[in-house]
Amino acid sequence: MKPTLSVILVVLLLALAVGGACAQTGGPDDFKRGLELYEAGDFAGAKAAFESALGLVPNDPVVLAWCGTVALQLGDTKRAIECLEQAVGHDDESHIAHNNLGNAYAEAGDLAKAEAHYRRALEIKADYFDGHYNLANLMSRQKNYAVAFNEYTRALLINPNDAEAHINFGHALQQTGETAKAIREYEAARQLQPQNTAVLATLGSLYLQSGDSPTAASAYEAALAVDPNMLDAHLGLGTALYNAGRYAEAIGHLRPPAAADPTNFVAQYNLGLALAAQQHYAEAEAAYRNALVVKPTDVNCLINLGWVQFQQAKYAEAAEVFSQAVQIEPRREVAQLNLAWSLAKAGRSDAALAQWQAAVEKLPQSSAARLGLANAYYDRDEKSEALAAYLQVLKVAPGNAEAHNNIGLIFLDNDDVTEAIVHFQAALKTNPQYVYAINNLGAAYQRQRKLDKAREQYERALKIDPNYEPAQENLKRLQETGGQ
Image (cartoon, rainbow, N blue to C red; front, top):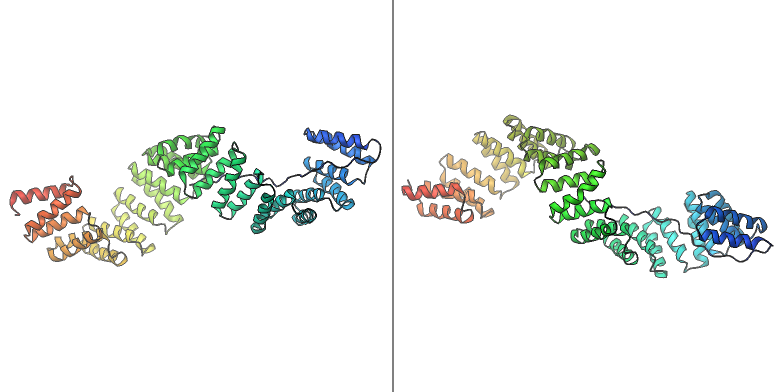
C-alpha cells in the first residue's frame, strides 16, 4: 500500500497595503502604531490601535480595511465582515479590501459572496496575484478544478516564485489524478523551498503513485535529512524500498511509524509485507494482526495473514483466515484457492474437495480452481473424476501444461500409451521446459520400447534440472536393464 500524504491548503492569504494618513488629530498616531504592532505580530495590540484610530475617523476606508483585516487574523469573522463591508462601501475601487472581504466570507462559509468579492478585486486589478490565488483556492475547495487550474496558472504567471501557489496547484492536480502535472508543481515548490519536508514527502508519495520508487525514495530521504523523525517520510521511504525489493532496509524504516501508532493500518500492513518478504513470518503475522484490528474486514490483509500462517505450517489457522476472506469476497480467486490448499494441508481431504467444488461453482472460468479440483480427485485416486475435471480445465485453458501432463499420466496408467504421448507433447508445446512432462514422455516411449527416444527425453530433462531425481532414476534403470 502506498501512503497518501496530504498538504494543508493555505486558503487565507491577506494582501494588505498601508493606507493614507487619517484626517483628524490623533488618528495618524494610532494608525501608525497599529501598523507597527501588526508587523510585529501583536494582532491584539494592533486591533486596539486600529479601533482607536477608527473612533476618530469612522468612515476612513483604509482604517476600516485594517480593522477588518486584523479582526480576521484574530478569528473575529463577524467584525471583519462588518468593517470590510463598510470599507468597500466607502471605496469600491479598493482591490485589497475586496480581496480581504472575500477571505472573510470564505472563512464564514459564504462561498458565493467570497467568490463575488475576489472577482470584483480582479475587475479592479486584472494582474492581482492574490485575487487569482485566493479565487483558485476557493474553486479548488468547491471541487471546481477547471476554474481553479486556470486561476492558479494566472497567479503563477504573475508571480512564478510563490511556493504556496505551486503547492496548492499541485494539491488540486492530485485530486483529479493529474499525477505528472502535480509532480511538476511540487518540484517547482521544492526549488523555492528545498527544506520543506511536507513538499518533499508529498513528492515521494506522488512518485510512488507514478511507479517511480527510486525517485520516491530519494525525495523521502531528502525529507528525513531535514527531519530524521518524520514518521510519514519513514513510512513512505519504507514503502518505496519495499517496492524496489530492498526488504531489509524497508523494515528499518517501516518499524518506527508502526511502533509509534499501532492504529496506522498502512504502516502495519506494509511492515507485514516487508517482514514476510524476508521470511520473518511470525513478526509479519503480528503486524498483519495489528492491521486487522484497525480494518478487520480488509481482504488483502486477511489473505496475507493466511499466507504467512500457511508458511509456518499453521494450516488450520490459515484455513480459518482464508474462510473469513471468502465470506467477505466470495469471488476473490486467491482466497478460494488458498482456503482449499490450507484444508488439504490440514488433512481435511473431504473439506478440501468440497472447497474446490465451491471455488469452481463461484469461479467457473478459473482454470486454477478447476485444476485444483482435478488434482484433488487425482490425489484421492478418483481417476475417472479427475480425468473429467482435467478435460474441463482444457475447455477453459486449452494449453494448460499441468492438465495435459496429468491427463497423460491417467492414460499411461490405463496403458493407453499413444493417447498419453499426445498429452505429454501438448504439455511441452505450451512449456518446453516442463521437466515433469519431459520425464513422463520418456517413460511413455520406454513403454513402447522406443529406448533411444526415452533416453533422449530423460537426458533432456536433466539438462534443464540436473537434480531431478525421477529422470535420474529412469535413465539409470534404462542403462542398467537395457530398457526392461
